[in-house]
Length: 440
Image 1 (cartoon, rainbow, N blue to C red):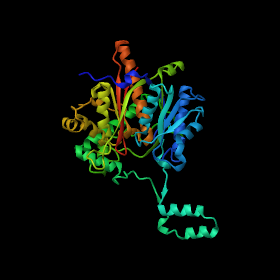
Image 2: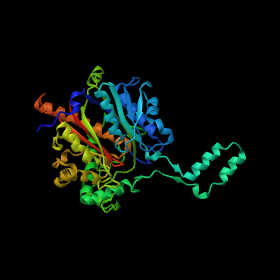
Image 3: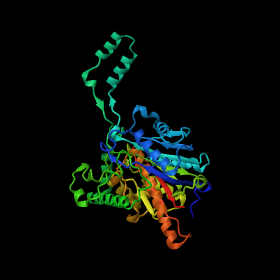
């Protein structure tokens, strides 16, 4: 039986028009004194300069940050007010952990497709270098009591109740509140459950670095990245790394996960301009790809048997069934490399007849051509500023489709099949977002 038409088939198109990001930097390096707002503003300004949007009011900007100070309550609005965009551009702050940037693109594209807005920017930023520090409850309560005291003696009495043990600060913890385990510890459990080998993880990590280095050398990112604070290329990238060098590293999570096959803490920002085709044409902006559809999912990693970062395993088949695609239809498959083991476990789940029958209630999605998997590298090589990753993945996939489409048209004429892409981003909290793109 043929699949039912996707509801999105009756909507107008939302297209990816352009994108910009800062180079990503390992925490404590180039952006050691930059805030998430600084980084997001820089990416917005780069996009405005690249597309001639300075002073223009857009329909919306949806973005966010995972690591936030109290001052970052309205970070997207503050970034827009600091940028070259018109201050009359409305904004929405969003938080969905590592999937923030891609979910922001889902929200903007849906608003465009139903005719609510003609254009919008989606993205995110994070600075682990500028991560907020928290104080304990005792110190917090004392500080509030001192602030509320109406006399000097009352302030002294409040301070006198403070014990030395309360004078400590707490750095943000990369741990799940429900389990107390870090993301890496959760990923190690999934890697062990799926039997993901150390050798396969190191091979994927080395491939990611080599592919990203080639993409930078080929100029792929020239119109996607704007230098910031003296940095002009992702500094997490290690072009000369090798499987042998990675094999020498000791494990940091479980028995197989190392600093080399896991993403480091990273600073950066990424934004993507989406619009209706008419809006883009009016400004002589040539779109890169159209958003076909998207799906989100969540898993019970607390009391269930699913891994923390496995939600895309469930989201992808629902998306494919709705739009009538198969996994093999993707000319580009971008799977966020939170850890090499996460990518490999996700692919193993999609290939497993038993898992797909028992957990998804369907035949296996099947194997994918590994040359189509993250062809230009991914988070292991670029780094992973949490809220920025979705924008980076979307921009990279859209431009690849644009290039593949141009090559096919040159070889086969205007009737050549349109290339397709599938995107997958896992996130803390047991959530994930996937998206389908198609060249125009």
